[in-house]
Length: 82
Image 1 (spheres, rainbow, N blue to C red):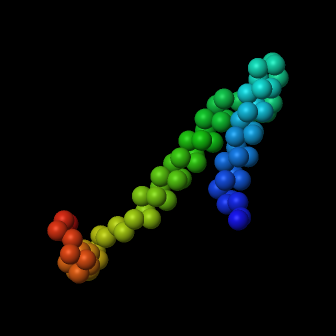
Image 2: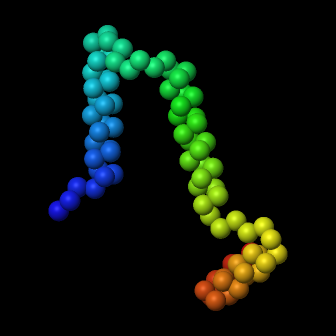
């Protein structure tokens, strides 16, 4: 059986977080980033992820696309046509 990449990534993040916490407990500043830099980086990542997620969905703006959505919902038997 093969270990997934997601499992490896989660484990790596956990190890880094635990090492950081341990070093912080002993008074060392293991990561050379300020709180503000971390906040800005996380904000950028969240904004980018939200943008990609929002546009990943089927966003129909033209009349043709809206009609195609109605037809697709009808073919699927969806009662919630929008």
